[in-house]
Length: 100
Ligand SMILES: [Zn+2]
Image 1 (cartoon, rainbow, N blue to C red):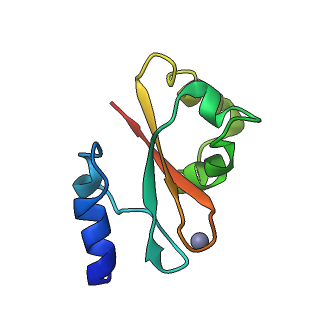
Image 2: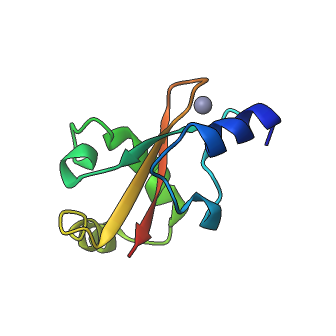
Image 3: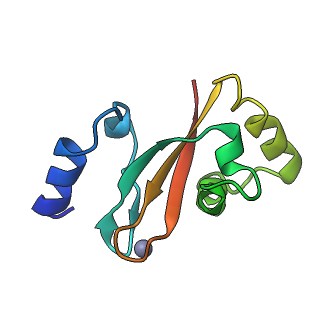
């Protein structure tokens, strides 16, 4: 990670406290900007962050559609966190999920 990206991650992304436990999302060789924790409607088809789900699923590619539906059913009650990032280079959405 470049010094500039490190400063972005450490200094300009308030409210994301668990990043040290995970690999910060990167795309196009750069650190992505953290957008926030998704609500169920954000990642549903047509939602503003639906595009991140491909990346989220790739993070745990072994799960079937059925298992994913079960996991995502926990999003509305806060049991599952979907963290969404945006690439500053290509504008793509990436993310990962975490079970509380
Ligand atoms: Zn990118």
